[in-house]
Length: 156
Image (cartoon, rainbow, N blue to C red):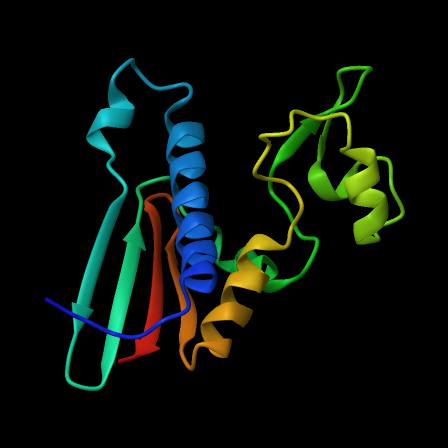
């Protein structure tokens, strides 16, 4: 069994973000499919290691990210989460009524459900920053039309 030293809040943040994104993508991909389809698309977590490094892979079948948009996930404030305005028009988290600064985004979402975990556009960039802080790396491999594999590499 792989053992390694890590900082629990940093690794917890990374894994929570990856699992949240995979689960959300899977549920969204199954929204218009027959009942029970989501059960046939599990989110998997694999941990593997050698003598010097370990890897955690979070994989889903949530439809993937188009090739021309994969690099956008590393941009702060980029979000694919759809929000609803009071007039019921859908907009993305980034296009909501704010000027693009983090403080205005948080203020515009202050009345939202306090358990809302998506839409701020900082999760994946911060996760990659944490992985690098821990001496590792975070990479995504997207298979458009199928799903996404996220790989966290860390030293042991």
